[in-house]
Length: 254
Image (cartoon, rainbow, N blue to C red; front, side, top):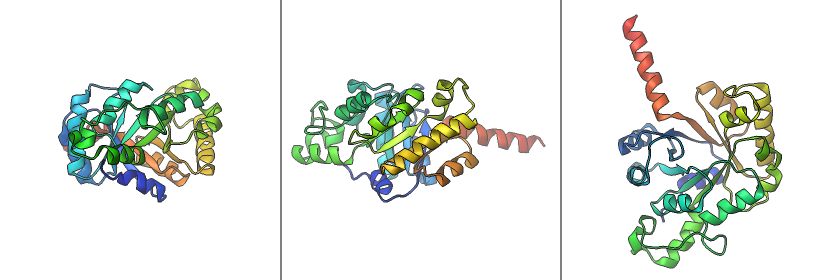
């Protein structure tokens, strides 16, 4: 399996940036790589992306040296296995609310002795069996990232026990789902949301676990980076295209 430059960057304390992707065209991945993003999150939870789409998007990511991450629909070993087998270097797993959720995710991602991932070396991630099987199993455990989504009050209340589970690379705070859990859906800059997110950042940094979150404007992204977020997911491909097109049309019509 290829070296995971994103994982190394986070271990070195660097801040990394990448958008969520909903378009199915691999060209979008190439564009994001040429633009200078560190990673892309191929969104298989929301939107039309299939595993076949995702596989071609991962190929594109490798061409432009950008790390491919897949967000799966839920904490399901079959979904996680398929995403890993096609070559995802990171898996974002939603709704991690307890240590048992975190353990389940870790066991689905890692081979023995850390986990219980289904074993098959006749997959793209193992270069279709051309890679030495023992090297593959070892490198897959070392290079694959687990990004655990904390998206509600339950997960925040159980954060200490979640952090006790080894193997998690990033705790990702979902601000929109968190706002809904707090009864203020969409108010991602509400003081209560900010307070809870700060609580997560503080605990994670104390435990030397990288923190990620989502922002759809530059000001908010910079705020969370200044407060300790390393893994910054900035906006969504469809939203980026819409905003740029809107700005162009407004300027042309003036």
